[in-house]
Length: 218
Image 1 (tube, helix red, strand yellow):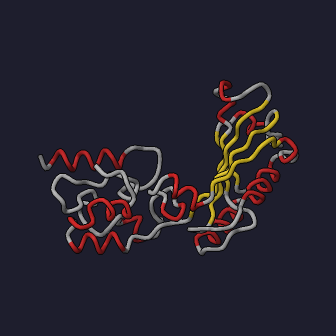
Image 2 (cartoon, rainbow, N blue to C red):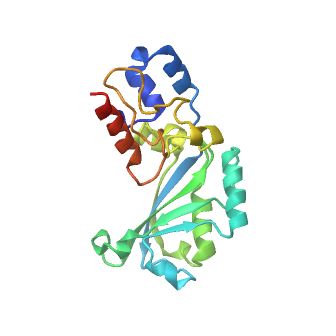
């Protein structure tokens, strides 16, 4: 079971793959990247919406039109002024993460694939939109850009933590056009990552379907 991006499949078993499978995986398209920022803050985030002060995870994008615009820019390879940001404040549920009044917060922004710039200020500004005064509570910052994410995990090709672009073709057929996307044409070797249907997400279905495929061929 290979829980890898197609690039990992090519590196691990590339010379054993049928030529049609190797060619298809070589054409696989990767999507926008993530730019991760970890914060140590003093106290809590000063959200203007009190409900945000109870949530472990928040998605910061603004109005629907703003989200569409920022995601469209990111997909086209342009860094938006107000990137979509996912933020976690899990210390609210698990206070052992904190030390005194110092609390850990992580956030990551959607940025273009392979983005080489520094999105730290854009992430902070996006949080400030919904929590004025957040900047003044920052005690320390640690960042990891798309290249850093790929170095940390080679499956994050170009900083793409979802293992593939959600193009119309790849939503319907990923990682290649086939009736069995979990099979690689190599006996006993199967792909079970989010590069297979139903794609990225916290659901485990890629692994389940890949396991069922392997069991059906025993």
